[in-house]
Length: 137
Ligand SMILES: [Zn+2]
Ligand SMILES: [Zn+2]
Image (tube, rainbow, N blue to C red; front, side, top):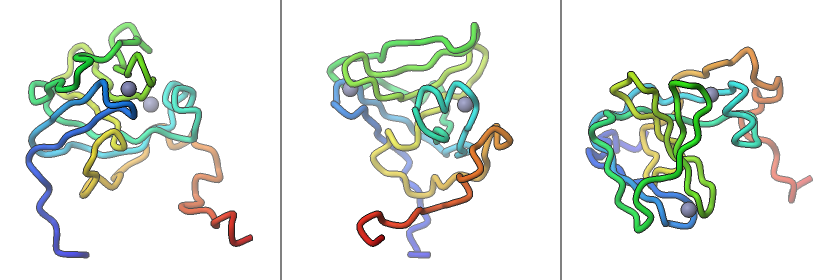
């Protein structure tokens, strides 16, 4: 450990093009990977990485304002940048928590996943934490 254990109170995140940006505050809740059918399909990869914050703590701060929304369940919608398509948040209608994609955050310190949702659906090779560098084959 580096001794830098104090997570910042305010965190900022943004999409790849910068049109949609946000701030969240407070203690991060349940950082985790998810390999459900929706996350893998939307990501085009083996999992998405999520972390929760108080829904009320989130403010949209980018020039594009709020993201575009797409409902993957009748009661759950996901926010993404309409310009660059970066996946940013997931919100369930009756929840006080907003899940943000870990890698849309600028500072990811202290957000290592503590769990893996839909782990049984994850591809077996996810046990490879870091594959070899192709340049050194
Ligand atoms: Zn964007
Ligand atoms: Zn999922």
